[in-house]
Length: 172
Image (tube, rainbow, N blue to C red; front, side, top):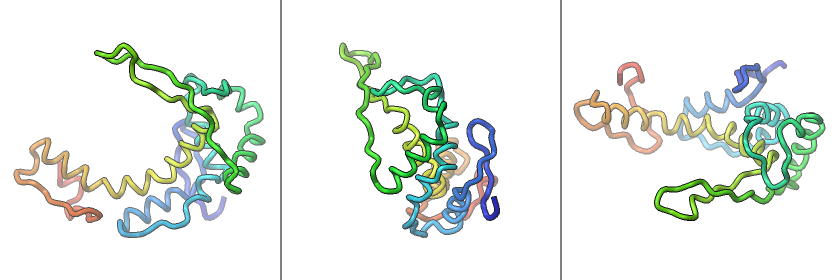
């Protein structure tokens, strides 16, 4: 897998990915604009890693397909899903409505449960966007935590998209 970076997915398996480079680029320059990311979403390796990261014990969607059932013909299913995403033919399924008990409410809090393919696509999109937004919000998070924990005696002002000049190790 020449030219690809490696990282470990939730299951501990090494997965070849270009997503590491996206995160590095976002950390180097917070003003960089990413204009061509969708091919990472429908990349079969990313879809496979997304499938692997899903919890098999989670509730099924309207279609009733479990992770075990989908995994029986995983490669064919992922190739088909990737093709539909690539040609913009993928349509999210209906959500299964469930209600979680909520104090002070008879009806409860509504919860929409996605079907398995929707969960795979949602995870794939998250895996592409997360490294970008982690770098954008990292300095803000450090500043807020420093103020909350009382490490910094005076407020630290950070303009949107600007990185703190203090490294994380000096903030704590």
